[in-house]
Length: 141
Image: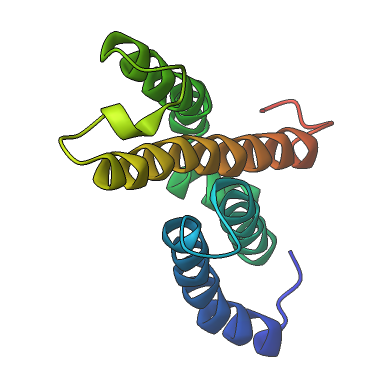
């Protein structure tokens, strides 16, 4: 790993800001442009930048591959589960209005949970794919 002091210093400054921006995009998605997919891509890009700066093995200690695999599998049932709960509550699939006492609050909760599931899945898949490609050709991976 090549040591570039300026790149490492800028990365240490930018990675937390990128992750905060990803959270903003995630939770602002039901009010304006953005949402789970965009936030997942931004968060995944922050993980990739972190990996490029500290190395693959150090990044795997922070973002454990087993945890990433669990998160990949967690996002889809979270997104689909909101639709199933809506059906069980007497509405249509992904009819968020029946989730809470007030249809407007139910809409916000449903959108938040679906987009959260998408964001978790996208960020985890991006990091997992990058880790697999970055570790390609190594016998210890």
